[in-house]
Length: 110
Image (spheres, rainbow, N blue to C red):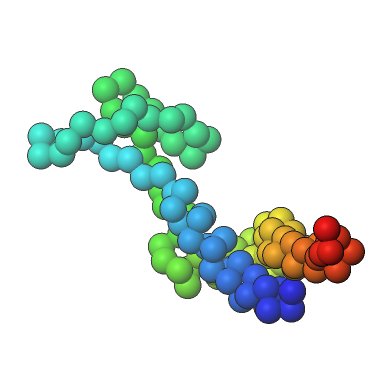
C-alpha cells in the first residue's frame, strides 16, 4: 500500500491540472470557414447574444500557469483534492490478497 500512496501523492496534482484544463470551455462565433458548433451553455462568465455562441476566457494558459493559479487561489492542498477516493481504490488489491490468503488458510482443505 505504501507504493500506491507514493504514486497518488506524485500523480494526483498532475491529474487534477489535466482535468481542469480539459474542462475549460472556449467557444467562438462561427465564421464561414468553421464547422457548426454545439449550442452554448450559459455560465456566469459568458455573454450570449442572438445568433452568437458562448465566449469564455480560458482560466489557465498552460500547465505551469494552472499549477500557479491553483496554488495561489486555493492553496497547496487543493492539488490533492480527490486523493482520498484514489487511496481507497488502490487499497482494494491489498484487501483482496489478505482475504484470499485468510480463506485459503482456513478453507484450503475443503
